[in-house]
Length: 177
Ligand SMILES: [Zn+2]
Image (cartoon, rainbow, N blue to C red; front, side, top):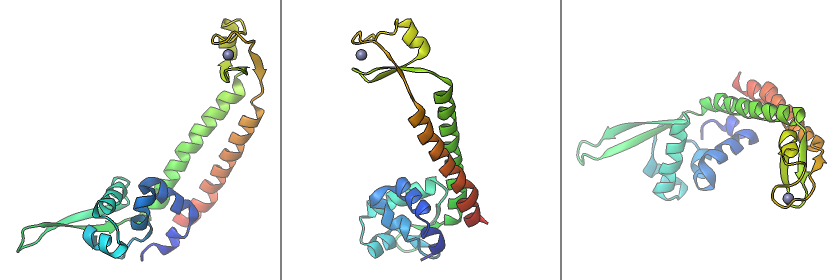
């Protein structure tokens, strides 16, 4: 099996699992050295050919696999020879984590800079301006809207952001270098 060192990383395992799903994971988790056909993979891993093809196509879409077509001289059939490109994983993963971090930071900023009110009956949250427009009364059930503390939410986002920042600066760079 190729790319064993990469595949030992739980972050990378999780990333592949999210891409291909549980049915595709046997394909994604055991990339062979060199070229392989979808039929060979299906036989070797004892999987449905369709599941193998689906996983390969997802990897292809994410720049983690490529194929070349070869026509059999006698039968005229086309064979697809696949190559795995897992050396692209750290870069893909880093880009994805950067997007996620950006989204979390944006959301955290929004939570920090807004004041919220809650209808405890309907569990609907309103920004201060919306609550004021409603006269601090729930438009659904007319219960009074209560000022809402979102410190725990902000704190959870801070922690998630810090964890992502740490992964981005330490793990992925270390693996990619
Ligand atoms: Zn309500």
